[in-house]
Image 1: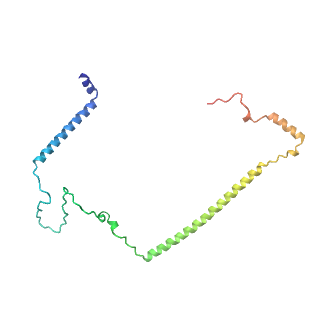
Image 2: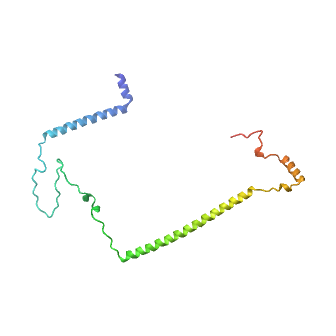
Image 3: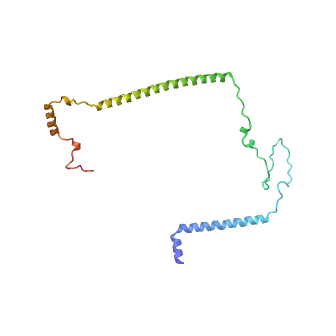
Length: 187
């Protein structure tokens, strides 16, 4: 038992939750019992349809809405026109007036001008594409022509060949192809 008290004192949040739950439970039970007592004490009232309407003094034209008994569901036709009135009315035909004819003619002229402008721009795009293709083909031709490099080795003399061999020995292979004795440190 002392272990239970130690646990509850160690967890005050849990104690607060339990007390709140118990209070809520008992208050709901009390409300349910009170409502049951009120139902038993109330005499049964006649339905809305059976009551006689009260006579009011006439003050002027008053629009009244019919009373609806919610206890007994009635079959009532639902008309979609009540909810969507804009769809029930057929669309009205606009009257053609001289101002609208002039506006449509100006819109037609603007459309024609835009189509002409579009055609001109399309022609320019086509010309630029042709020029680009020509440029690409020229570069390709120049690159292919550069492959056939003529060194004129047939006209090379013996003295020039000896100079070339000596310079090749002096310069050695390219530095990028040499193996390094001391490789770089990777940081």
